[in-house]
Length: 257
Image 1 (cartoon, rainbow, N blue to C red):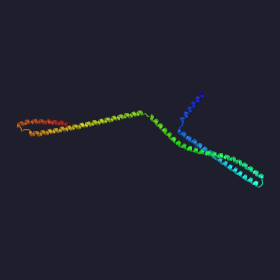
Image 2 (image 1 turned 90 degrees about the vertical axis):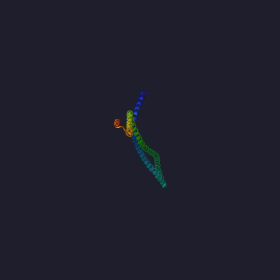
Image 3 (image 1 turned 45 degrees about the vertical axis):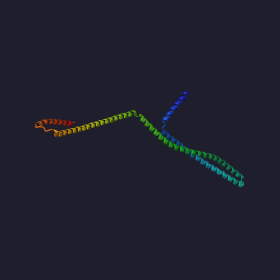
Image 4 (image 1 turned 30 degrees about the horizontal axis):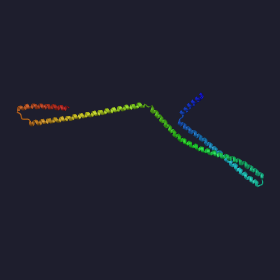
């Protein structure tokens, strides 16, 4: 392979790549529809011209055919009148018009076939344009969706998702830690409350026991204590005063709890 061929191939490859990158699907589809509509206009003009030519040929054919028939009748009239020369001249005119009519008939048959073909092509092109318009709208919608998805994916890929997820994980750990501290505080508050109630309950037991002791002392001392002589009664009162003082001291200690 020569250097020129290689260079030509490289240039064509680069040009094709540039054209492919420059092609916008929406613009290309719109231009394709415009080109097809221009072809449709030209085809309609061609069909109209072919039909007009067919009509003229048909008129000329009918005229020459009519003239040929007229000269046929004149030739018969001249021959009937005994004018053979005039009849021969009429037959000559009839033959000329007949030959022209035959040629026009061949042209007319060809033109009818051409017009029918052009009409079929026109209908097919109109159908293709209608189908192309429908497909164009669908492809434009798909192209727009593809562009939007591409932009979305580009946006997503440009985001620092790793750092964001790491931040979410750190915040989740922090929330879990806060919940754990809150639960611990609640448990400690509950334990403290239980201890306070336990102290109150124990304090009630001591008070009940103290009251029972006081009642027992009061009732027991007046019922079973023997009557002492006056001198010994004073001696016995001193120990009772000491007990009362100790009880009073115990009561104060319990109240201060």
